[in-house]
Amino acid sequence: MKIQAAVIREQSGKFQLEELELEEPRANEVVVRIAGVGICHTDIICRDQYYPIPMPVVFGHEGSGVVAKVGSAVTKVEVGDHVVLSYLSCGHCHPCQEGKSVYCLELFPRNFSCTREDGSTTLRKGDEVVHGNFFNQSSFASHALAAEENIVKVSKDVDIELLGPLGCGIQTGAGAVINALNPSAGSSIAIFGCGPVGLAAVMGALLTGCVQIIAVDMNPARLAMAKELGATHTINPTDSDPVEAVQAITGTGAHYSLECTGLPQVTRQAVDCLTLTGICGQIGAAPLGTECAIDMNNILFGRTLRGIVEGDSIPDIFIPRMVELYKQGRFPLDKLVTYYNFEDINDAIKDAEDGTVLKAVLRF
Image (tube, rainbow, N blue to C red; front, top):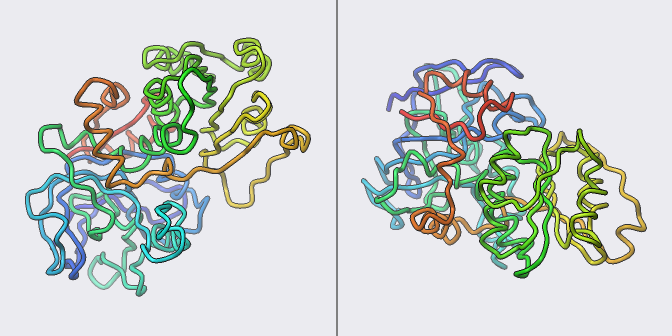
């Protein structure tokens, strides 16, 4: 079928709107008519080749929309269902079998190789191969081809254009707190970086009952939004040392911290601000090979630094729960979102990069 898609043809290049040909779904595949798709930091860093992504390519991995076609073996959804697209795992390696699909041994090839498992591609422009299958969806397009395994059926009584970011960025921030750190009620948490992922973490911390939710960011507008969403304290690192400020607020250091920027110096701060036995979650993405210096004694005395992917979430479970919390007014996702028409994708990318908006969502 003919589709419209935003294609990247060179490192850090502009997105070009082009007509492409999308393959018909195989037995386990689903075609989704995209209604809305979030712009995630991962789309931007892959455009810039932090990870070696083949080009030309169609990015986009926070798609939401309506099922348009299903393969012959699909039982999870049917045509007309509303769905959110998320990441793909293999389902058979030992992390997958233990319920830890975000740490699938095939996570990178399944989501970043931009081909199917057998090496085939799903998009063409005449005789030219255009790489799709980014996160097994490539949803910067009017239609996306996904597998039954990485689509999540959601309620039809919520605006489907809004829900795409639950597939990655919002799931990552909220899930990092709710699923991975799982703070006890009454505890303290410091969140470094208040973009959409960090602000989703603020909302997650409020849901779990943290009594001190400390937001750290250089952008005053983002700090103000953090306060609106539940942060009890804010710190601007241009005004004071964030480690000292967190320790002053908590008395002994934070029970938990979350690093959302991907900057090594911020990871160090997120570890240093912890109390003894405190846990720091690292979710900010950095270029391959980036190293971070950690004081070994800070780790020796009971502190933990752990990486977190996709908020330790099982999308089929976590995303519907977030939708229900949104419906109840307890997870105000819509406060983060600014909509753009799909053809304005380059403006949306620019605004997301310079911090003009929190979560840009393209819609058709």
